Amino acid sequence: MKVNYRQQINYSSINFLDWKFSFFYSDKGLIFTTFQDDPIADFSKWSGISKLVNKENPKISSAFLDYFSGRNSSPKISVDWNFWQFSNFQILILKKLLEIDKPVSYSEFARQIGNQKAVRAVATAVGKNPFEVVVPCHRIITKSGKIGKYRDGSNIKAALLQLEKQL
Image (tube, rainbow, N blue to C red; front, side, top):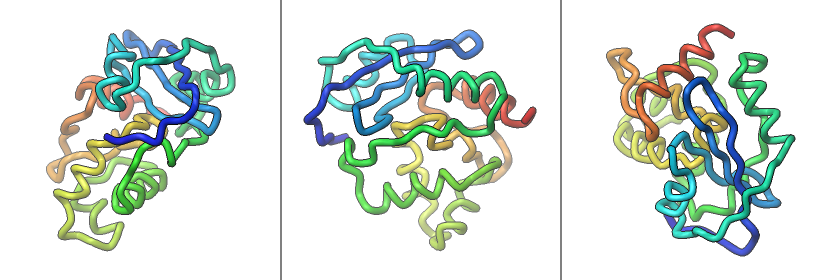
């Protein structure tokens, strides 16, 4: 994806179960999250940027740790919506995902945004979500109720859904 890159990009990591969870942020907010073992390579693949600063952010870390420990149902973290060059449709989808508090199918989500014929376009936009966990694309499941795919693996998606089920 194309980016609007003019500021320092920082990153940090925390643990969730057996996985490392990494987040990237600017002075304007969160720009990327990943469960990949090599988070810098993953971010670079998405953005083309590899010049990063490993810098703790206690506020963001605390919000994610509260979520991963089951103290809240969604981490409340500011997102830098202007970092990525999203289409208007992608922004609509990502912002509507913020309103979902339980698993829904792609077709149900398309219906909720007022365009039930846009299931494939919705799925594509959901799959390009750089803000995993904060923008809860993991809550989109298949029509048959199966977990479906997830950028960082269906096992992580299952763990996130299980965590949220307990809240």
